[in-house]
Amino acid sequence: MNILLWHVHGSWTTAFVQGKHRYLVPVTAERGPWGRGRARTYPWPDSVEEVPYERLSTSDIDLVLLQRPEELTLLAAWAPAVHLPKVYVEHNTPKGDVPGTRHPMADRDDLTVVHVTHFNELFWDCGGTRTAVIEHGIVEPAVRYSGELDRLAVVTNEPVRRGRVTGTDLIPRFAAAVPLDVFGMGVAALAAERVAVFDDPPQAAMHAELARRRAYLHLCRWTSLGLSLIEAMTIGLPVVALATTEAVEAVPRAAGVLSTRVDTLVDAALWLLESPEEARRLGAAGRSAAVRRYGLDRFLADWDSLLEDVLCASR
Figure 1 (tube, rainbow, N blue to C red):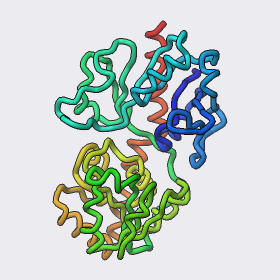
Figure 2: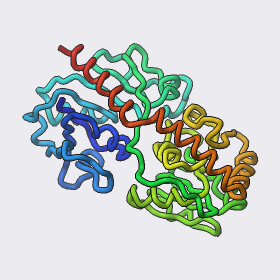
Figure 3: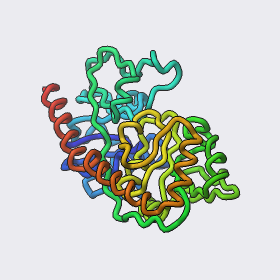
């Protein structure tokens, strides 16, 4: 199948393009948000091909995978005569008046909305649009847990801009008790006493560093489900996390400590620093659960089944 999709979320796309299809990714000269082309820091296979936008209308495309509402407008402008089956992947939790938030693709009969978590499907109002859930899958990191550093790892992108959404305000409370290493895009401003920052490292290098930390700290209040959390579990890190959104389903009790009480989580972080064998035990349980639930084979098989259904229905 020839699938057109934009490069939006690098980690999710890295898993998606490991399948058996041909993946066409729009590219513009400036490689901005609407034409990034191939990833520079993720392992994408040769089956991912860059397509300049002026060639879209003449490209062989079987199905379009959308991830942002604006992509419908771009598709109409770049390939106005092409009418293709569409799937819209919803990566995010709703914003604003959450219990009543209408999805931008609500009440449509020309596409399917695929949520990446059951939490997303529960909270978005998609009206009469057909929906499905295909949970995340990841390319398994090459490194394994050692945990020799008495520090906790945090992975977050743009924490200053996103603020309370990513739990940025909670970092000083944890740093007062345990040393933290923060990885991700736009983290430089978080540098402080007991908080070291690693700004936008390559994925493989970040995984290697995560493996050396004692535990993984997940502070997102309102997010779909960070792939970095699943990656950390697959490496073998025990988890200390806010009991919010899909994290309560993704992290089994045997894999770490989840709570909505910050003091409980601070105590858990201290306990894991002082108990390396317990940390290793919890991390092993988390790795087993993550590999079973978020394995690449299951993820790709689920997507193949849905894509075939959508393509057959369009015919």
